[in-house]
Length: 208
Image (cartoon, rainbow, N blue to C red; front, side, top):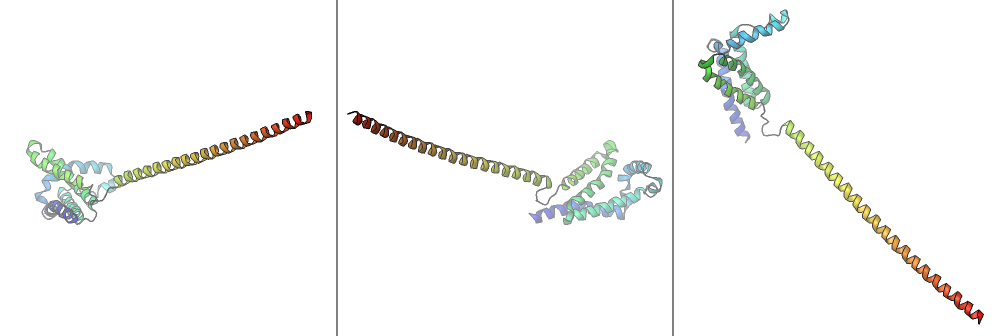
C-alpha cells in the first residue's frame, strides 16, 4: 500500500513540478495566467506594509511567476517524496490560488481553465490531510478520550461490584451474629426455665 501511495503522490506532483519548471524557465508563457491576481494583490499588500518593506516586495508579474514556479517545484518534490507531505501540499494549494483567481476573472472564456484549476486546488487541499495511512491527531485524541472513558466506566463498575460484595459479606455476618444471639438467648431461656422448675420443686418439698 505504501508503494501505491508513493506512486499516486508522484503522479499527482508531476504536473506541478513540470509546470513549475516551465514557469521558472519560460515565465512569459504563463505570466498572463497570474498577472491579474498579481496586479490586484501586490499593490494591496504594499499599501499595508511599511514603506521600507513595501519597496522590497516585487511588483513584476514575471518575477512572481518564477516565485510561484519555484513554490510548485518545492511543494511537488516534498509531496512526491513523502518528505513533509502535508506542508508540501499546502504550498501547492497556495501556488494554485493565483491561477484560480485569474481564471475566475476571465468570465466565460476562462471557464474551462477555471474548472481545471479548481480541480487541482481541490486535490491539493485533500492532499494536505494526507497522513500516510496513519490516524490523524484528531482521531487519536478522540480514541484516547474513548479509552479513558471506558477505563473510568470499568473502574466504576469494579468499585460498585466490590462494594456489593462487601455489603453481602456484612449482611451475612450480621445474619450469623443474629442467629448466634438467638441461639444463646434460647439456651439462656431454657436454663432459666430449668432453674425455675428446680426452685418450685424445692419449695414443694419444703412445704411437705
